[in-house]
Image (cartoon, rainbow, N blue to C red; front, side, top):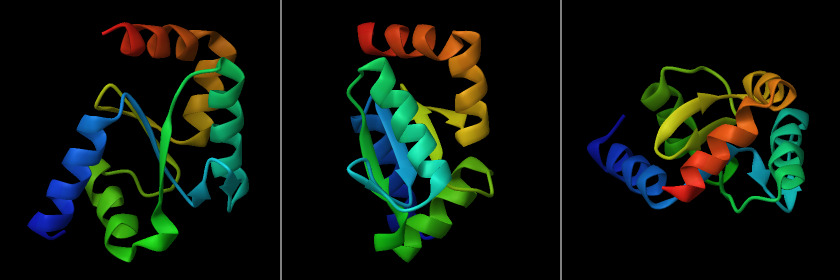
Length: 107
């Protein structure tokens, strides 16, 4: 990944408490996995931002290298990579996601 792409990813992740790299955006997810993540975060009623990886091929490939995670969507909370759709679903069901989000928003 180029230094410019890494810097852009660093900046996006640093500037947003909850950030989802996804196909589409929170108003119009472009895949089922991205939609799952949006629905979960919406159900928690928390503010979050999205980055449409379909709009930028450098970001789409770069985020996979950045996190060493091969799939999209990718969720970052408080600058930390949390995981994708399956992990978010499990955390939501366990109640861990609500706690993680509350801690992040309080910091």
